[in-house]
Amino acid sequence: MLQNLTRTLFVSLMLCTSPALLAETESTEDTAAREAALPIQALRNFADVFNQIRHSYVEEVDDEELLKSAIRGMLSGLDPHSDYLDADSFDNLQSHTTGEFGGLGIEVGMENGFVKVVAPIDDTPAQRAGIQPGDLIIQIDNQPVKGMSLQEAVALMRGPKGSKITLNILREGVNAPIEVELRRDTITVASVRGEMLQPGYGYLRISQFQSRTGQDLRKELEKLKATRGGLRGLVLDLRNNPGGLLQASVQVADTFLSDGLIVYTEGRLPNAYSRYMANSDTPGDSTPLVVLINGGSASASEIVAGALQDHRRAIILGTQSFGKGSVQTVLPLSEDSAIKLTTARYYTPSGRSIQAQGIIPDIFVDRAKFESLAGNKLVTEADLAGHLGRDDGNESNSTSRSVLDSESAELAANDNQLYEALNLLKGLNIMSEANRASAQKALSRLDNKE
Image 1 (cartoon, rainbow, N blue to C red):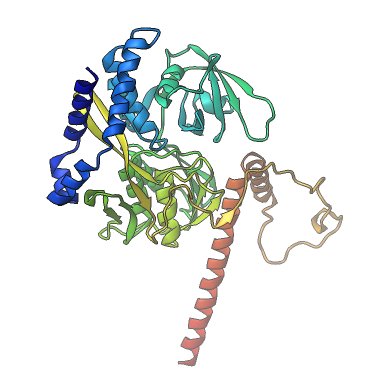
Image 2: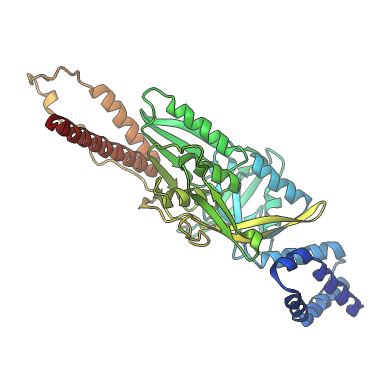
């Protein structure tokens, strides 16, 4: 029995290797040598363990489920992103790319046997409950996560809209576990949203890279540019964006680049090498740009930030990104199952690997609480009785200035990183205007000489 099972498993493993794939990577002699070098004793051990479980485990186990568990174990031992996909898992993967799915609104991975939060999605139960990037989920409804696969943990977190769930999490800097109760909801992700921060300065937020993200970004950008006074600077917010579709990230980067390489991939197989270029037929938008990133910015977010940084098209501000620089390919096994396998790594245009390194911002600004030390309003010349008036014919703009100051103070208190990005854009515009004025004076002097 054991010998037959070993032979069956050996033949199955050989059939899983595509002859066409072997033809691309190895000669006939290399293939024969590789077959001869297969770890036969290890395969025998596997078959022996399989047989022992079938006959000796305390409960009867279905052979098909046992083999599925073995596949999951092989894949989970490779890296946190390779996984076995049954029919439900494959449906869930597709729903993430279209922007609507059920659950808590949280992007997760595995770390040391626990579920690690990559990023909560905007305006979801997880985000509203204060879940943060880097949190480790150790219990789900009092069930320990240790020992679960990522797929099992995700299945526990899903459920009907309106149903309650309790998560116990560990957070860096907090001594005791935190218990959080959430209510599940249907998660509909608006991939892109935009608004004007102040006259002339726009804000675009991408929460996740989906199939329509590139198109939606261009529409929102055109709306901002059509506002009164136009657009003098733009903040692109990729914080807590866990990634998504590669093609969507290429489209977003292409919006701001006129030509050149955006990202390339390399793997063991020849077809794992790909290069993605900006479309040189359409000029990229030239609005001064600051990109915000943090530890929750992963994958597609890092591709965009890395490309814009390497091309000196944007200033990257915030904290170091997550560092997920690997490519996953879905390989079908049957009509209702597949494996998600890491097949390549991402590289920025300058050749930097994103994997386990992430994007390091040009200007490091950690999230912090802002508190003004100015105190009460100071007395100025304009407050003194009998002060001289202005003689330049301009009316005082103190009212509009106080409104802007109030808006800036509120922004600084709520989001200091965005506040710093806005100030940086204003500084760039001041210097740009000064340079233009200097150039005009130089041209004027030349005209006068002529």
